[in-house]
Structure formats: structure tokens, C-alpha cells
Amino acid sequence: MRNLIACGVLWVTIWMGAFACSAQEAPSLLIAGGAVVDGSGRPGRLADVRIAGDTIRAVGRLKPLDGERVIDAHGLTIAPGFIDTHSHADGGLLEMPDAETQIRQGITTSIVGQDGGSHFPLADWFTQLEKQHVALNIASFVGHGVIRRQALGAEYKHAATPEELQKMRALVEQEMKSGGLGLSSGLEYDPGFYSTTEELIACAQVASKFGGIYISHVRDEGNDALKSFTELIRIAEEGRLPAQISHIKLDTQPVWGKAGEALQLMADARRRHVDISGDVYPYLYWQSTIMVLIPSRDWDNRAIWEKGLADVGGPEHILLSTYSPDPSWQGKTIAEIAAQTGKDAISVIQQIVHTAHDPGKTASESVVVTAMTDRDLDAFIADPHIMFCSDGGLRGSHPRGAGTFPRILGVYVRERHVLTLEQAIHKMTDLAARRMGFHDRGRIAPGMKADVVVFDAATVHDTATTANPQSPPIGIPYVLINGVPVIDNGELTHQHPGAVLRRIGSLNHPLKP
Ligand SMILES: [Zn+2]
Image 1 (tube, rainbow, N blue to C red):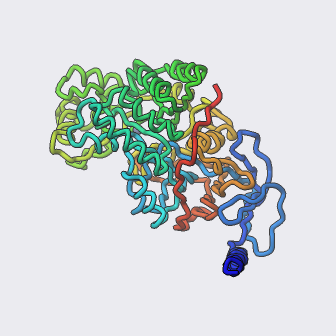
Image 2 (image 1 turned 180 degrees about the vertical axis):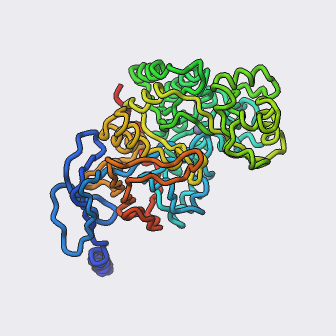
Image 3 (image 1 turned 90 degrees about the vertical axis):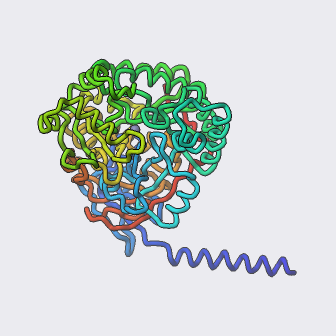
């Protein structure tokens, strides 16, 4: 009898719940009359898209329902929200939950925890994001550098001992259990710089156990780039997991023109069933610390600096974008600072390195270095296994942080025909979603989460430059995340519908050779 009463109560609760739910369900929204480029790579077609709650309900010729909001998309393209596979939007996200530079580009999901740096522990940060709410969907890698610092402490400038490695592996396991997508590393930076390939393999094996992938800012993006890609392939092979080369580039003169060789290395690996992919940003200049100009870190050796400068085309190719000890130097090239101060370029660089990086110094510096070639960049942008990343932060000083995705659509699709609109959208959405293990994003199709971008393929363009790096793009009037407009008729809505995307199950969806 008690069971029966309990059952009755339960049934009533469910029924009431259902009633309350349908009564409160947000009215649906119709995006009408646009060309749907659905993310699959298939040609676009004219269709309407109905969204209810956080989900796409229908795609086709649809009549508006009573009381339904209609967004007129005639002449516009409707695409899945863009997925940024290497983002630094995690820096300051809780303070800037609108993430305006990202969402204005059409980015709806940012993959953070890159270059070996992630929030730690991930579980706490995820909980905080869900409590405070942010505009973007967020997924994170487990940063190898963060784990390394946890296990080795301040004295990290050595290869990990077996005991330290045990600690690192346990921490990778803990973070993977919290929903990390895999292991990220930044091997040009401290403390990843000091790790051996064997250490990375041992950590990657733990990520592999949970179906994770390995993603890396490789050891050298210049003279030894091909050697670095080979190291990544070995980590994937012996770690038994897929791997992705972050912001792939060839940024010194000796390796210019070798994109074909790099892509061949990756293709050969895939033929051996080692699943390798990459991501790229559409700029000929990179931004990082001035330290990466000479991977040997031999700061006082003028001959090595001489070569380092020649490799990137000279001091006029190096723009000092951040320099806290003397902000008047910011925005000038090393050649200009040298002329202004009467010093030679190498002395200027040595002064910057020592002021910012000698023990006990905390000054910040960053440089924007023009050192890639159009030919290599075009080859990476066109490759079917390479997706797109902004590598940008919320308030970055490289224009990639505000311009990457519209720049692909404006310059590389419309103006230069390096790839078709459908190919570009596929790489921005479905390809990235499958790589990162999101089964319900990256397509415009019924049942998928309603991350949607509406843009004008005839005008979409980036406007960010090194002088004005956060300048918003044009031609993207609507961006919806989980069914909620975050950009509405060009206006920021200050809505924060983003979800934390934890790894679910196995990510291992091998790409085709
Ligand atoms: Zn990086």
C-alpha cells in the first residue's frame, strides 16, 4: 500500500513536471530563408532552421508558428557555430564572461587549456564556470606544464625522475576523470621545455586510457619544425592516441616552402594508423615571448642571436607588442627601437630578455614576428586534416584573437579561393567537433545543439590589425549558443548560455588516411 501511494505521488510529480515544462518551454525561433551550409561539407541549400530550447528541431521549408520569433536570413548563410580548437579564452573569462572578441567571430565553442597550461584542478574551474555562467561553450585540455609544476615544484629544470613521473601520471588521471579532452603541451615554454619525449609518452598513455588526444605546441616551429612534428608523431604512436599539431607553422627561412613535407609526414603517419591532425591561424606573423626566437636559450651568445634574427628576416620583422618595463617601446619593431636608442638590435633584444626573464623578474613582454610564407600557410589552410584556431585570448594583442574565422571566410574563401565555403565551414565545425569528441555539435541538423552563426558570405571580413587587434569583424549579424542569441542583429546581448563540455567516453574517432 505504501508503495502504491509512493508510486502515485511519483506519477503525479512526473505529470506535473511535464506540464510545468511544456508551459514554461521557451517559444521556438525560426531562422528563415538563408542558405544552410550544414557543416558536412555538402553544398549549401536554401532552408529554414527551427530552434526550441537549446536544440535544433527542424531544417527545411518551414512556416512560422504562432508567436514564434523569426530571424530573416534572406541573402545570408546559416552555419553551425565555429569551434576554436586552440584558444586562450580561459584567461580572464570569469571577469569577461561576454567573451566579445570570440563570439563576434562566430566562435561558439572554445577549446582551452592549451600549450601545457590549464586551470587546476579542472573540476573546480568547471564548477565555477557553471555557477557564474559565460557566453561560450568551454572544453579544456589537461596542461602537461601545470601537471609538471605540481609534481616537480619550483625546481623543474630537469627531466622528471621516476617518482615525479608517477605523480604526474596520477594527476593526469585525476584531470582526465574531471572531463579533460586530453593532454596539451607547450614545449617551447617553461616547464615543458625540460621534458623528455619519454616523459610526454608516459603522460600521454594515461590520457589515452580515457580516450583522450594529445595536442601540442611543438618544441620548435622553425628550423627544427619537421623534427618536432616527428616527435609528436612518436608520442602519438607510443602513447597510443590521436595527436594534433597546434597552430602549425614553418616560421624560419630554412624551412620556408616545406609545408608539403610536413603534410606528407602527417599523411604517412595516418597510413600507419597513427591519427595526426593540426590546426592553423590565417596570419603570416606569430606572437609569443621573445625567448622562442632562439630555442637554445643561449641569451648571451651574439652569434646565435645573429642567426636567430636572420632566420626570421631581420629585426624589422620583430614587433614588440607588450613590454611592461617601458610601454613606449610597445608597437615598435626591434629595428626601430635600436635606431631610437642608438643600440644595436641584439643589445636591445638581450636587454628585453634579461629585464623580463632573469631570476626574480616578473615583467611581461611579447613579440609579433612576421616569419611565415603565403605558400606554406595556404597549403595548411587547404589541407583536409587541418582545422582552424585563433590561438587568441579575450583581449589579445595579436589580431588573430578577434579576426581568425571571418578572415578565413573573407580572405581565403571569397577573395583568394584557397578553399570553398563548404570546406571552410566543415573544418570550422563538424571536423573540429568530431576531433574533440562532441557528438551533438558541429552540424545544422535536427537534434543537434543550437550553436548557429548567421553571416553574409559576400561581406564577412576581419578588421583586426596589429595596431587595432580587437577590432570586431563585419558581416556576422547573428550568433546563437545553445539556442540563445549572444549576437542579435549585430548587438551584443550579454547573455551567457555557454556550457562546459566535458569529455564523454572515447574520443578516438580516427580520421581517414
Ligand atoms: Zn602555442
